[in-house]
Image (cartoon, rainbow, N blue to C red):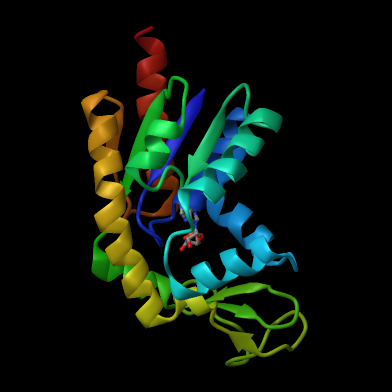
Length: 211
Ligand code: AMP
C-alpha cells in the first residue's frame, strides 16, 4: 500500500505517518528527515541542503528525487507512507507507480503557526519539547541532561511564515493533481491525534471492504 500524507508543516502528518507505519508495517518516506540527515554531513551537498533548510526554502527537485528514489529502491518497494513528499508538481509527476491514498491533513494557517513556533529542542541531546504539549520542568532547560533549549532555525516565526507561504503556493497544485485522480481524502487536522488516525483508518477500511 502506498500512502501520501499532505499537510502544511505543523499539521501533525509525521505523527500520523508513524501511527500508520506501525499499523501496516510500512516504511516512512520523509524527505524532511532525509534532508536533515544530509545536512549533518560535512560535504558540499550537506552544506547546500543545510543552507536551504535554514533559509526556509525548498531543496531542489534533483536532490530530493535522488534521495526519494534511493529510499524507494532500497526500502519502499512494497509500499510506503510518504510525508512531506511530493512537495510540488514536478516531484508528484516524477513519483511513478500507483498511489492508493492521499490524505490531506488540514489545519488553519493560524493553528500551524501556533504549533510550529512552540517546538523547542535541547542544544545538547536534541530531546524535543513543546510549549503547548510537553513543557520542560525548568523553563528553558532540558529535563534529561539540563542542556539549554533552542528553537530549530526553521521553527522561528519568520522562517515558519515563509515555509507556510511556500507550502500553500507549491503544494496546492499537488493536491489538485491527485484530486483529478480521485485519490484525495480531506481530514480535519485540528482534532486530537487518535481521532485523526481513526478518520484515516476508516477510509482505508471502507475502501478495503468495497474491494
Ligand atoms: P520538513 O521537516 O518536511 O518541513 O522539511 C524541512 C525542510 O527540508 C524543508 O523546509 C525543505 O527545505 C526541505 N524539504 C523536505 N522535503 C522536501 C521536498 N519534498 N522538496 C523540497 N524540499 C524539501
